[in-house]
Structure formats: structure tokens, C-alpha cells
Image: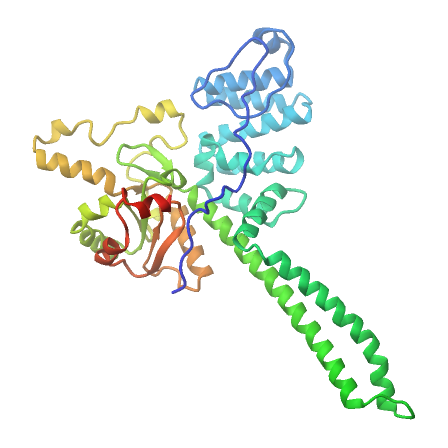
Length: 435
């Protein structure tokens, strides 16, 4: 089986800084997750007087304040009001973006995608902002985000041009001589074309014969070489273009995987990219029976796997199509709300007084993670299987390095004993070089 790719290249897709908080002149909005977009120079009026004048700027600022207090519905109303007050481009971008954050918080992915699409197309929103905002984490785990990301990957002036440009930069780092090859393809094709242009009349003269006519076989041979060279070089040029598109698609899939959410044993939800340098995720995808058997075998090597930073991530086929057993907690919520969620270990003393059981529970907390949005995890793995020529739905595993790149992958479930031999302990020099 062709190796399944890493979840995230070492380079980030976008180097944009996290957008700035929009701050009125005399009021500094405080929020657990500071609102991102856009500083507008405001007048010296107070927030209350700005609200009375009902400008687009005052409505956005009030919406940000309401959002920071958890009044998402009221904040959404303010952003919609701002859009109805003939905002300038910066105000419109801010209103649309923060409106999308409200929709994402409420689980309205389609409405969030519509707002972001408009901001991307008409108001020059940078796609990297969408990738890095924690308030859009729930949206990034939705099919609507994947559609938006695919539009951005294809590029164009309407949407996501900067995102495609960033993808190309990463692609050039991974294949640094592609541009040089293309230059030579074009240069040699042009040279062969010019040579053919002069050779064809000679070939015609050699065919017609007569005094001073060139040798037909030599001339025909030269023409054949030139034409054959053009065909080969053009074919190589298009082949290189195809490979670049495949690479861009793979980088985009890597970015998608890096943004998929996990629930840790403390009930804190993180994106996979946040585990970089601290854990070696091992994704196990397959039937419930295969996953259970693999997890049981992994138990025999638990201590050694923990020393190597292994974090098991089981993905059971079809699990996302089952109705949820319990209400989702924490995902897309403000950091304060997420931090207040109960930890598995908090009520340990109430459940058992066994020191052995307590040690086992702590190890369990570090050994496995639960996927959030299983449909998106399954969709990503199936897309990856298609791209690598693997039958979608087969049991597969992916072992990631500390820096996020793929170390090893294949069909079936991994051989844990072999993995223990291959992976260096976390404190080893090789692990430090891997970060």
C-alpha cells in the first residue's frame, strides 16, 4: 500500500498573524477569546453614544462585546444590523466574519460558510484567518468547511487566492526543482519548435528532389527528433502540472486533518495540530472488531508505548452515523466554558480507592483520545484511501511523527512490538531531532 500522508507539513499554510481586536476609542473589550478582526479608528464617543447613533462600526463593536459575554444571539443581531447600515469594506468584512463565528458557535455551518464566502470574495478576507481562529473550530470540522477549502484550493480571484498561493509555496518547498524543470521544458520545446520550423521546408525539398536537395533520411530523422522532443517535453510539462495539483490536494487534505478535533481525557477538546511536538498520534481506522482487537494488543505494550509518546486515536467505520449518546460539550464554546467541564479524574476518589486503578486511569488518560465529529474523520480517511489507491473502508493505520509528518502507514492494524522497536523514547536524542 502506498504510504498515507502526514496530517500537517512542518510549514503552516499561512503566516498571517491572528487578527487584531476591534477596540473602540475609550473601551477595551475583554474576552476569553479576543475577537479577531480589524481595527478601525473610532471617534472619541463612548460605546453608548455610538450605539445611539447606530453606525455599522458601533454595531460591530457592540456585537463583539455581547459575544464576549456569551450573548451570541444578540451579538448576531448586531452584526446583521451592521451589514444593513451601508458599511464600508472593512466594517463589512468584520461584520461578516464575526457573524460567521456566531453561526459556528450555534452549529449553523451552512450560514457560517455563506458569510465567510462573501467575506472572501468581496472583502478580501484572508483564508488563513479562518484556519487559525479557535471560535471557528466547530466549523472547520464540518462538510461546509471542506467545500469552502476546496474552493480556496482551486484558487482564482474570487475566493481564496492567497490560500492557493500559500499552498504553492509549501509545494515549492517540497518540490524545489519543479520550476526549474518547467523552465527547461518550455525552453527546449521552443528550441525544438524553431528547429522544426526550419526543418519542414528542407524536408519538403528533399521529398520533391532536384539539384541541391538535402538528404531525405537525414532531414526526416532531424524532423522526427524535433517533433518527438516537443511531444515528450509537452507531456512532461503537463505531467508535472498534474503532480503539482495532486500535491496541492494532498497538502490541503493534510491541513484538513490537522484541524480535526479530539476530546482528551480531561474533556478538553483540541485540534490535532495542537499535539505536535508532544505526542505521536497513531490513527486506527477500521471495523469495531478490528479496532477492539488492536487496542487490546496495544495494552500489552502500554508502558513502552507511553514512553514513546504514543496516543491512540480509534476511528470506527460508521460510528458517525449513529445518534449521539450524550450532548456535545465544550466544542466551539468559549475557553472559559470549556475549562469548566468535568475531568475524568476529578471524581476518582468517589469511584474507587484502589491505587492500582488510579494509576491505570491516569495512564488511560494519556494513552487514548476520543474523536469529535466522527463523520469528518471518516470522510478524511476515505478521501485519503482513494488518493492512495486503497479501497475505501479497509482497515488502515497511520503513525505520525512528533513534527506531524507520517512515519509509517499501511493496511490492517499495526504490529505494536515492531513499533516499540522503531520508535525512540521521548527523551532520546532522535525524538528531539524529530520535533
